[in-house]
Image (cartoon, rainbow, N blue to C red; front, side):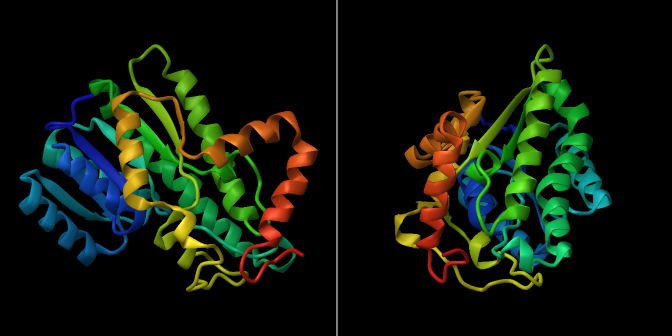
Length: 271
């Protein structure tokens, strides 16, 4: 896919991977529709991208957990640009708490954002993407292939997203629409700082060693290349690929290795 003058919607575009994707795709010539709750920040981003890269960009205040916001995001994209070529479902929440301590509202919140946000945006965008034979992307996680301790809600929401995207891909197999699931490794982004604790409050700090992680810019470049190449599944790290295959081939052994890994994180939840 040549990105020049294509219309791309990105949710969760005010920070982290979403913001990096906006810059990467603007650099490649795409027109952008950016959705997030932080409207002022979005407007600043769109203004800067238009100046720097000469593209057109639209900011739409969007809480993807609300169906009406997702419908409005898609409607604004069509009204402004007349078409949708790519939808990138990137908006997401994380968490860090043991299930036994967890307020169930936290799990519901993660499902509303990570799973239902993807479903809502995809539902309203699909008629337009069918017209352009475009691309639907779900930014998932290795946690959507392998359950992680202290992340029950996050893993559940990403498993649900992966199942939805796989079903949708099969339904659309003969339509020309492409469906890609992108799974970054641990990434230096705001998502872990904003991860919800057991009572739904943001942690405000990360439990992992940021220096060993992918940057949001690296992830954005990989996803942009993956869309161009119409990749089916994009697992971006060796550790991620190993985790997926080990979990399929040696699940009990992988349970032990994942336990050992997370027992070593800062202020571990399991010991």
